[in-house]
Image 1 (cartoon, helix red, strand yellow):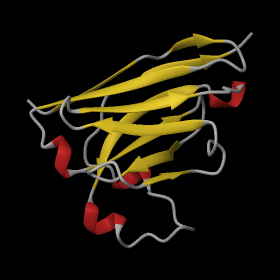
Image 2 (image 1 turned 30 degrees about the horizontal axis):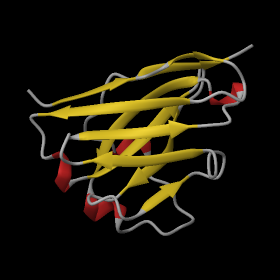
Image 3 (image 1 turned 30 degrees about the vertical axis):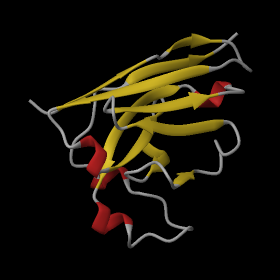
Length: 131
């Protein structure tokens, strides 16, 4: 069964750090562009970062640039998101998903991946930033 399982979420104070993991199984992980999305309470899902298949190219939405780092270990079939300088507005369920490469190539730097184009995803992990 194809699975993506996120972990690493929790409660953290503003200014703190967390590292999220996304473990893939029964899935050609190393062949795919991978992304992190998040859904804040009462809001729709939003793309926050993506990384190409070999890890050599990354993108971030403006609100997390400079604070979050996406990386991957293809030998371990795992995607990561290092989150530093966390803010209360980062509170959300975070999930990982592959992105279709053909679709991704149609996006320029001003277009963010549409969460509606996700064809499968993990269940997510909750991050709460609060004092």
